[in-house]
Length: 322
Ligand SMILES: NC(=O)c1ccc[n+]([C@@H]2O[C@H](COP(=O)([O-])OP(=O)(O)OC[C@H]3O[C@@H](n4cnc5c(N)ncnc54)[C@H](OP(=O)(O)O)[C@@H]3O)[C@@H](O)[C@H]2O)c1
Picture 1: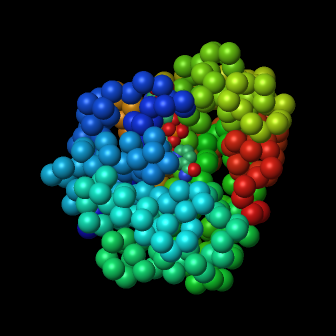
Picture 2: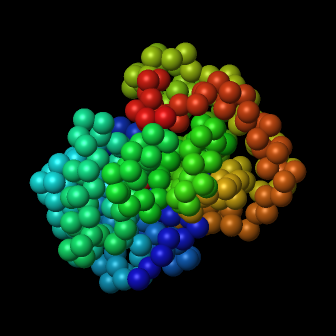
């Protein structure tokens, strides 16, 4: 049975769509194969990524390679009752062309349905051998306490974490450390912002300018907040200067920082081609000592302070129970 690797390949962008734009399926499959060939053993997808499109592409890529891969997928927001969860899992199994899922995660907590019902359905799938581990995403400290009090297994909590999204440091990381819950860090280079490829906020496509870093005036944003574009791009420039001094790419440095933070089991990278996979894997060769860790935190504290304790990247009124 395959295990999580320190970097997991995230497969959302393979679905293309509003956030990501055009993506060629054969390029996606080459990207997955190059990741697996270079030592990445885990993939993360979801039914919500292109309405099953990402899972379908992952299934095609894994023909002949399934047993060497740790496959994580999810149940969508609002899929919380026993029948809906069973149906979702069966659909995922079909698209992924497999008879088991290594990690089945709740995508967002459903505060309308008792956790007990969701847990019973997931546990039933595990007992039937269709799921190896049960995990969650986007759970605040109250969600996690409630889930565990209801008897729920927690292999991991998948959360947004990068130098530009550090809200989980306030309460969720300490809770995960105390309870021994591994964090799967998503958007570790903040959807590409921490590569330096975007020079100004106007360069960022609307699909990726939905986060609270950007003004709610952006076409697809719904958070209602002012955004912190000036602070974000000032922080990116500082991280870039540190990367230049070390003669490493900004993406690799930002990823290395995430991987080296407490409680992180894996960083879920969103590479779209084999070149990005190779560059991102170079993060594993960068040492983050205390001095470098402190310098990167100082460079990005202004964004952390602005965004505050709400980890929700896309909503001012947090969907996390904190
Ligand atoms: N549970 C959740 O609620 C949740 C939410 C979000 C994401 N996720 C998971 O986390 C995964 C990763 O999220 P993400 O895609 O936002 O991750 P990310 O690693 O922060 O951003 C990935 C994007 O940055 C660009 N990029 C990546 N490496 C690069 C490099 N070396 N040089 C230049 N550009 C590079 C690519 O887009 P371009 O080349 O187009 O710029 C890529 O699609 C998703 O696929 C998904 O599995 C989960």
